[in-house]
Length: 241
Image (cartoon, rainbow, N blue to C red; front, side):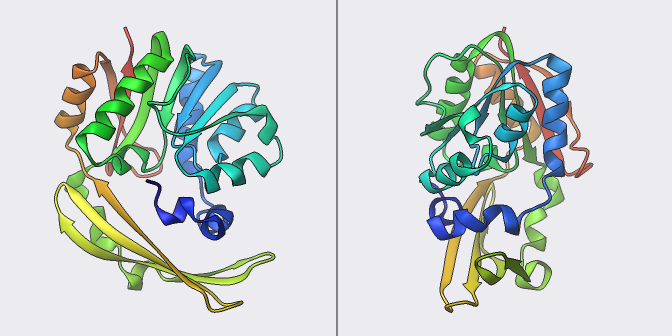
């Protein structure tokens, strides 16, 4: 099930406006160049920002996401017809023989239960050609990122063209490691509607992720730092033999 932030049509429509800084994607674009990837699978593509960046560069992009509302936003963007959009998850994929599979932002951490995590790793591997790579990031639990997830630090008002002012903030609901649950609240000034979206993320240790990848037939080539958040995240580069 997709969180309301991605699955509710009104929230999906403003998602990019509320999170405009996507400098985190520079890392993944660098991997596309580094590995000479010509066909890329973006797992959890959301509103299609990364997939469309790939298409702009002449890369064959396939985006898969369980949130239909987010995919509707992605398809409607300029150039959306150049990307193959799939409603579902990594277990719903046709044969692709992709050079690279990615899970940007928090996608890997949204896979909180063992079955979903295992199914995604298995599905990504099957979608890759031999020698293809899976690249994704996950927060280092030692950094305790959730300590900054409160109204005081996150409250803001965004003016969205055609929508008006949208007030938003996040609050912790529960910390029961390795799971952390939090709630976003959105208030639309135009009509006073209040929408909330609950999310749960799983904070995996570096060794745990490495063991899971090995168990699913990957070779971990590298664990890198995230340039935009140094020291706070693990970036895994795993290869299908």
